[in-house]
Image (cartoon, rainbow, N blue to C red):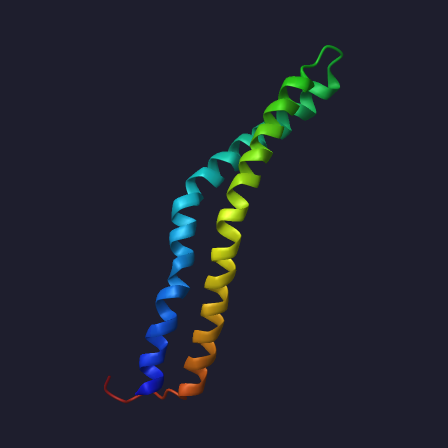
Length: 103
């Protein structure tokens, strides 16, 4: 029983990773969309003699800065969530659970 109760201790911190993804996921998807479009546009502009690659590179740099802002906020929490998940997986394996017929 004590091992089952100990799982509760690690379960909640392991779920903190979901909050990080929820809080930053939309912003990361938006950055991904913009960077994808910028990359395509940049490839086209480089081919043109009077292309506007400078402006696109400026926008790309701004998006990179946005990513650099998000990374420190999320990496520590995601690493901790992964560590707690690993502890939980180990503890569950050590419980030696068996299937009960009828349940």
